[in-house]
Length: 381
Length: 230
Ligand SMILES: Nc1ncnc2c1ncn2[C@@H]1O[C@H](COP(=O)(O)OP(=O)(O)OP(=O)(O)O)[C@@H](O)[C@H]1O
Ligand SMILES: [Mg+2]
Image (cartoon, rainbow over all chains, first blue to last red):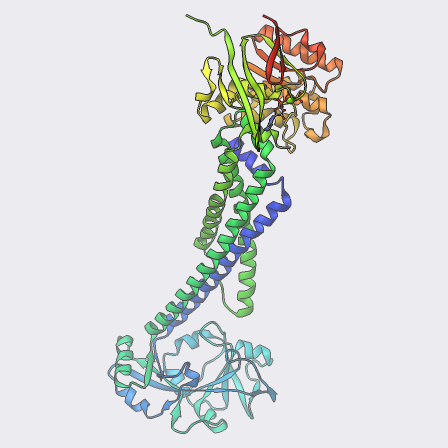
């Protein structure tokens, strides 16, 4: 068996260009799978860790797609604070910035910078731990702050503004007192400032805020508070850790399904590619396979050899997929800002999948090869 | 006790090929016996059915009708596996067109029949000494494409002998050889017959070979036309 395995192994080096095409056919499919899943896992990781730190509940307008577009009465602050188990209610305001340092900023909804305005005292006292954790230079907002902002590392790098520098946002100038590191839940493009500064310098709807950040008492059940809020006020949407997690999970599940679906299609294509290569190689070697039978190789010997050839091809394809996929995944992840995850399980899955494709793709050509009649095969010119 | 003296027996072998509307009878009722430790030669004009007969006698091909027995076993009753094992251990074949594997070197080609059993050092040594016997030991690492026709022929003779078969079938084994190497192959064949009781069935045109035959079958149009020897 070992010797046959060795023959099979050597055989794949005999038709180099076709073997390379087959490697690639398999590699592309598996590569796609690896990149997609590594992204899904990466997003999942970051989302879990940041949502995990979120103790509060985000209350926004029921019909709004995003907090940024939500608009609710300031008056809810009072009503929400009265709910049992609620420790604090922090009003939040968002505003898209059109000019920084006198230069127009553009971009889509996802990268256009925006102001996130809150009460600095509440920022300091409240459990904004997730944000506090993300600070990598300087400090967070404090009670009594004015004329100051916290900015993301991206903005700091883009406008070359460090701690103590002044940053012109729209027509007003602010001192940078903190820089935070962006990740999947802390946007790359936020400027965090005290709400008074915001109201002084930018237009806003009087008596309205975008959303409230509701912080429960220690030991209180956030889910129950969310439910209570939504039950009492139809026009509000309350999302706590659990709801966010659910939302993220269902999104990730969809992504994962898409990833698997896309990969299945490419695997199918890869399997057809491998069947094609193996069939051609079997046809080309008709005479040789006939000789093997004539000198006493059994059907099983030949089936074993051809299937192994196919599996070797797919293993090489898997290795290529692993290398190229990892590079693509990390590069793309770096560009997009997601720390993609290539887990051992994923590596194992890629190999198992690759070998499976090789096995399945090799069966038909192998059986065909084994049925070759020695004399017919020897007559083949 | 009856000794199976006839190591090969063919009874009324017919082989026909259907080509469109016409049927070609490559063999048209051939019966013959091959005794152990004899050299049998098959002679006949081109297209008379010599190769076809050799393939059928050597269990590579099935007759359309009629039966072939090798060592008392009816070939048509053997399953695929037994047939393969039979070919591997009892029968050696030297093909008219050699059928070496182009990507393997001389030594590897000789070892092909040993691969299913896992080749070992002993087999490799045997391959080298067989290649020495056919005068090819200086070309172990050469690929078939780098050899002359006569050299390829000698490699395929070594391959036929690697598993020490009892019966060797050879289709024009000296066809491409000069007198001197041809003679050395003849000497090898005679030695194997006399010392190791091997049986040979040889298709040939070569008059310098026919004088060593124990029995000669002439065939013409798929039929035995003449038998010489006992
Ligand atoms: N697969 C086949 N299909 C059709 N006809 C065949 C086939 N194999 C052999 N024949 C025919 O059978 C006849 C005998 O062929 P065979 O190869 O046995 O001749 P041969 O005596 O070995 O000739 P040579 O001396 O040229 O090798 C030929 O006429 C050939 O055309
Ligand atoms: Mg012939």
